Each structure stands twice: as C-alpha cells, then as structure tokens.
Image (cartoon, rainbow, N blue to C red):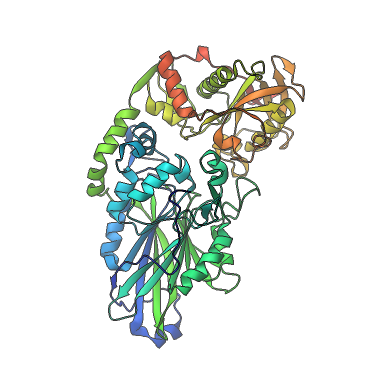
Length: 596
C-alpha cells in the first residue's frame, strides 16, 4: 500500500541527550550493584500520556465550559505540557523522554472538525493534535485504535505532520505482511563522561481495529498478536544495543477481549510483560484506567516488569524513574518505579493555549450553531433503564434513513427496526434552541449507519444478549440505581435498545431468559420473520460481541455518519417534538410487574 513503512534493521532514530551522573539509586536497588559502581549510577525519567482523545485544552465542548467532573479532574495537552515542563525542569530536560500510547485523533468536536468539517487532508492545515504534540516535544507516539476512525488518508497526513515518530509494529500490510508503520525507535541519551544510554521503544496497537474500523482497513491492513509481535521485535531492539526496552501498547492489561476470540487478545499489556523476555516496562493505554504502578513477573526470566497507565484525556501523566548502573561496560537497570500525576494540580501551559486558540475558537463556533428548537427539555439521564424520548429521537432518524434507502428494493416490504445505546447519561436537549453540541453530546461516537437483515429468533437472541447489562433483582427487592446496570462491567454503550417492536426485560430472571412479551404490531414474532435493522458500524462489525450481526446480510451501507444524520434531520425539520417520535416500546419488569 502507498506509504508503507519499510523497516531498515540497523537504522535507528537517535537524539543526543546529556545526562549528569547523579549517583542516585531507586528503592529496591541491590546492595551489591551499588557497591560495585556507586559513582556510575544514573537516573532517567520516562513520561507517558495516553488516550488524549482530542483534548487539547481543559474544555468541555459539549457543555460549552471548562471541563469538570465529580472528581474535579482536568483534561488536555495544555495541562500535560505544564506537567512535562515541571518534570523536565526538576529532573533536567536531558534526563527525560516523553511518549504517548495512542487514541489521539478522535473524541472531541475539535478532532471531528478537522477531520470532517475542514479536513486537513483537503486544506493542508496542520492538525491541532499534531501542532500541540510537536510543541510539547514528544519523543514518539503509538497508534491507538481510534487513529483509524477517519480513514487511512487522514492518519497518513497526521503522521507526516508529526515531528515524533508514530509507532505500530503489529499493524502490517495485508498484501505483503510488512510493517505499515514504524515498529520501534531507539533514543540515544549521552551521559557525560560515560557510555551512552540507549532506550528502545516498541509500539503496539490494538487488534480490534480490524473489527471496529473494518470499512477503513479491510484488505489493506492486518493487526497481529501483541505478544507474538513483541517476541519478534524485542530481541532485535536488544541486539541493536538498547540498554532499556520499553513497550508502548494501546491495550489494557486484563488479558480479556471485548470481541471474543476471533482476533488476537485486545487487552494484552500484562501478557506482553509476562511472556516476552527483555522488557523493562510497558506504558499502556486503551482501558482509561489510572494505574500508577503495577509489577508482573516475566515467566521466562523471573524479572519484574513495570506497567503503568495514565488514565484518559490528559487527566494523568505517568512518570517512570529508572536507575541504571554500568556493570562490565554495559548499563543495567537496577531500579524502577512509577507514579501517575494528577494534572488538576497545574495550570494550562499558556504557550499551548495560544497555539490552539484559532482552531479551538473555530470549533466552539461550530458546535454552538443552533440547528433546531425543542418543544421541551429532553434528558438522557434515565436512558440506561427507561425508554426515553431522547433515545427515541435517534431511533426515529435511523429508521427513516434506512427505510427510505431500501424503498424500491427487494427488501422494501420488510419492517424496519432500529437499535441505539445510551452513550451519555448527561446528554440534554434543552427546551428551546438546540445546537450542534447538544446533538454531539447525545451521540458522542463517530459511527456510521448500516441496515442488516435479522430474523425474529435472531432478534430475540440479540435482545437477550443485550439484557445481560442488568443485574438480577428479585421480585419485591428494593431497586438500587447504583447497582442496577453495568452488570459484569458491561458499559452503557454495549446496552442496545430496539425500536419497532415491543418487549419487556424481566430482571428477576437469569441472563438468557429475560426477554418476555416480544411482539410486533401486537402479535408474537415468528422465529423466521425477517426484519431490516438499522445498526451502527461498531456493533455490526462485532463491537460488543453481539450475536448474528456480523454475518447478517447488509442491505444498506452508505457510510452516513449517524451524528451528522441527526444534525441534518434537526436542521431540516427545525423542530424537535417528542409527539413526533417518542414511542415507549420496552420496560423493565419483575414477574410482569413494571419496575418503574
């Protein structure tokens, strides 16, 4: 494929850094190592961000205000920049390196604007995330799965704009099997009066891209197993003289996958640490967790490998300190520790704020455009456990689009159903003017719309799978909203509601036996009756592991973005009136007694 990275083994990227010998040892360094060469110990610091998701500034585009949450976290690269500057000043800029573990190019209207409204692929302007990361001075960044959301041309443009190498060793050409992106770098840090320290960094992205962005990558890229890929590249990095080997992985550490066993393990960060010898630390992301420090034991060597994850959106910065001692002319890691620093303790870097101002202001102007008037206030707060009009609005738009698309086709006579999930519990259409940001706050993902064919029995299976989202609650027991949903850590976005049919979910029954009173137009649904179902690309491609959808016949796929379809529909009608679309068609029950 065009732009394919051709690895040149033996050629590495280096940067000159001067590090003073500090004579400092991390906790846990062996006494024998300290005695052997106390004057030759050196401490270096590696910083890592991850899952920035388009947050350049401490701003919530959906609320049109400074970002805040219940824990009073802050977000954004401007906060990260201040923290990085402080660490560089404290440790000495020459003692530090800075990396990112992926998911940069999707997540806020800022990212969306420069991918879709004024795409950098057409304007030639530098992407705001490239501009900010270049100014901060990242040493390398790794591809996350969301880097592929807007297609390979935009990703390629962003990579060209980045001053830092962009890594992804396990993303390979589907035709040649060669790395499609740079697999690794080696940064050379020159210690005054000593042999240079060489830090190797291997970048690994998430195999789920093959499912989640199938339309963008199928036939062009393949995504290999993280452990197998690391086993291939880590020895080469060591052979090239790396004294310290890091893995930046866009993968959680649980060893589980959201998509079953069809692809290599999604959350394989700890597996890489355990199964691949020669790694000192894994800087990981993807799961959006705050993991200050975790150690796992490598099965082959018995050595401890450090793992750390810096939460999400720039809320935390991982800081990893390595102590190295020169033994027999070679640097050896003798101590390592890490922590995550909360960026709400610092102010935004004014340099980054100024750098982002034009693009930020343009995005704010875009999201505040009024597109319709709402007859009343509609909230998504209760959408996870009640049928709400605001989610019915999504269902209405999706049903109309797919229904019009199949008119005149062989499937025109089939009933059209629609699925939607409660992506945001905070979304609101205010009474009166509704803006782009209100709509974007309701539909926060950049999904596209498809139409697939399912039978009545498949619909039942789909709904049973979705209903595992609820914890089992006995008849008569009190309902605790704090524990009712998210059973088995199922996220809100993996709880699908179906419109066009009527059904109850009996939460007193075990998983797999919960869908009762399933009807279409007042009648029980025959197992073989066919329906067309409006569905988003994430779900249709296997996201969440729902049954039947990946193999179902596709009758519509015009690559229409659902969020933009909602905006266009609101703009065209000018009015959002629940009387036009609200239809309560499902409810929670216990032994046929409604829960609410």
